[in-house]
Length: 187
Image (cartoon, rainbow, N blue to C red; front, side, top):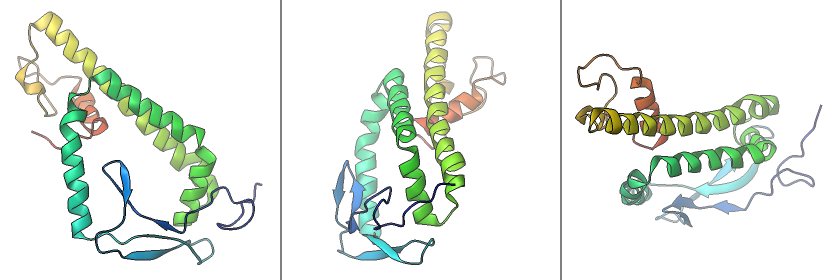
């Protein structure tokens, strides 16, 4: 059985910074009101870092950044979006042990669960949605080539969107694709 060193101890898998800011718009920014809170690991009951205490003002900044990025991300072609999701999955997998350790330190869950279930499932989810994005692209391409134009029903809703409104096998793909693309709203 592998024994992991506690945060801050020699041999720990991760060296935590003393304080973490919010990550908004591609950069770390301090909380608007300048407040932080102690992050305590359930493993030992000790403080191992501090995190930004976000308020409504920070949430508004994050929402503004997300809305600003949404159009660009939505206009990015499906293959590129899928490849980005696959790169994220690969990076997570490359750092599996470190991320599992971080998750265990943060929530107190047994390392065997974070190492063998939680983090690998995260990798699987990113790969799954990358596949959904690619499948959606192929469906749209098929519709353009064989049906003339994309059916108006493809503009953001799940369920039947075939010209004759039959239940369509891509309903699940459509929902997965929206989630994979960060489009979590329906029509």
